[in-house]
Each structure stands twice: as structure tokens, then as C-alpha cells.
Image (cartoon, rainbow, N blue to C red):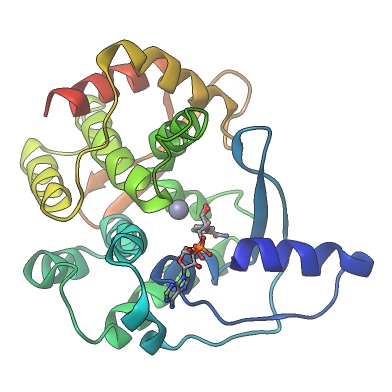
Amino acid sequence: MTDLGGFCAALYKRGIRFVQVPTTLLAQVDASVGGKTGIDFQGFKNHLGVFQEPAGVFIDPKFLATLDPRQLKSGYAEVVKHALIADAAAFREQRINSVFIDDWTDAIQHSVALKQEIVAQDPLENGPRKLLNFGHTVGHALESFLLSQPGREILHGEAVAAGMICEAWLSVQHGLLNENDLDQIETFLFSVFEKVQFVSLETEAIADYARQDKKNTGSTINCTLLESIGRGVYNQPVTVAEIAASLRYYHRL
Ligand SMILES: NC(=O)c1ccc[n+]([C@@H]2O[C@H](COP(=O)([O-])OP(=O)(O)OC[C@H]3O[C@@H](n4cnc5c(N)ncnc54)[C@H](O)[C@@H]3O)[C@@H](O)[C@H]2O)c1
Ligand SMILES: [Zn+2]
């Protein structure tokens, strides 16, 4: 909702001041930081959007008490992502506490701080901000594909969790990440998220959606991969065939 509200406020009379009060974990740790607003268009995620910072953001973890656990987990995927790209110690802590914590205050503050630090270095996403796309090349492709299939839609974070496993596997294929780290990431994500269902015949069609990704330059798909847990690396060229292979790997798990 923060994306839609911010988008409308940014367009109305060429932009009016607005504040955000995010009430989902996803919006609190991710959408509320960094000034991105947008809506889905013609079946593609966030294809219409602008950068517009709100005048203020008010985050109250108490909202989460009434949030559907499925929505809570969806937001948690971004909390895990922030740790995987920038903070190995936070990932170790998440493996101990997992999603089953009562008070989200510290986890939200820490996750927001990690994202803020990255966004501050590169507000318009020409460089380091691309780190935040980890899990999203494959994740957005899966999310968009399933959005096109009535009754099979999944939540953003569920797609990102699957995307992080695929992209961690791609990181190993590219000689960046070691197998042990991949194993830890997979085991942890599967302890929180159910496997996203698709049939192996659909992998090419899903991978094809990655071509439409806003992050591409020309025909190269620029992906964010991991060098280790806690260290992302952006602008890694991957092919559509490699993305399909990562989906096949995920499907076999
Ligand atoms: N701009 C960004 O940087 C960014 C980052 C991450 C995700 N997103 C986008 O955000 C979108 C999801 O937004 P969202 O997480 O705000 O979801 P949402 O606004 O769609 O809300 C999800 C559901 O939870 C309900 N709900 C919300 N707060 C509640 C609460 N406190 N208690 C009970 N029910 C509550 C809503 O009514 C809705 O049914 C995704 O499409 C994703 O692409 C944007
Ligand atoms: Zn996301």
C-alpha cells in the first residue's frame, strides 16, 4: 500500500508532501525506505513508478500483531535478504531466532538501518543500491509468471525467498559462493518458507520473464549474487538459460 499511496501522492498535482505509516513487515523494512513508489503494469511488477521520498515514515511494530502470518513471513524474506547481502552476523542471529519472535522492534530497526546505509550511498540505483535486488531477478520472474496464472499468485516475499535460493545457487555456479553457504541459506529459507510450486515444463517461460526486468541493460541480465553470506556483489551478467537452470535446481530440491 505504501507503493500505491506514494505513487499517487507523487503524481497528484505533480507531487504533494506525504507521510507513510507502513503496517506490514514488508512495507516497514523495505518499501518505506528509499523513496521507490510504483504499481504493476501490463502484468509486470512495478513497471510504472517514480522515486519520491515521503516527508516522514512512522513505523510501529504493534501493527504486526494483527498481520496474517503469511504476510509476516513475506516481509521477513526482505529482512533475511538485507542480512545476506550486508550482515553475516545478522543472518547467524536469524538462524537462531527465525521468524518466531515476539518483539520486532530491534529486527526492524536493524534491517531498516542496513537498507538505509545502502540507499544513502546510491539513491538512484546506479551502483551499490543494486545489491538490494538480490533474489529479485528470479523472484520477480516467478512472481510475474504466477501473476499471469489465475489462482496461482504468490506474495512478493515468497517469490523473493525462492529467488534467493536460485540466485545463491547461481553464485556457486559463478565461482563466488561456497557450497556450505548455499546449504545454510537453503536450509534456513526452507525452514521458514514453503516451496513455490511450478512444473519443470514451466521453467523456460518463467525465466523468460527475467528479460523484462527493469535492471537489464541491453540483452544482458544483470543479477546481484553473493560472494559469501553477508556480502553481495552487483552487476553480474547471467543468461536466461542460467536462470532456467537455477529454477530447475530449485524445483529438484
Ligand atoms: N517500494 C519498495 O521499495 C518496495 C519494497 C518491497 C516491496 N514492495 C512492494 O510492496 C507490495 C506489498 O505491500 P504491502 O506489504 O504493504 O502489502 P499490502 O498493502 O498489499 O497488504 C497486505 C495485506 O495485509 C493487510 N494488512 C496490512 N497491514 C495489516 C495489519 N497491520 N494487520 C492486519 N492486516 C493488515 C492488507 O489489508 C492486505 O490484505 C508488493 O507488491 C511489493 O512489490 C515495494
Ligand atoms: Zn522486494
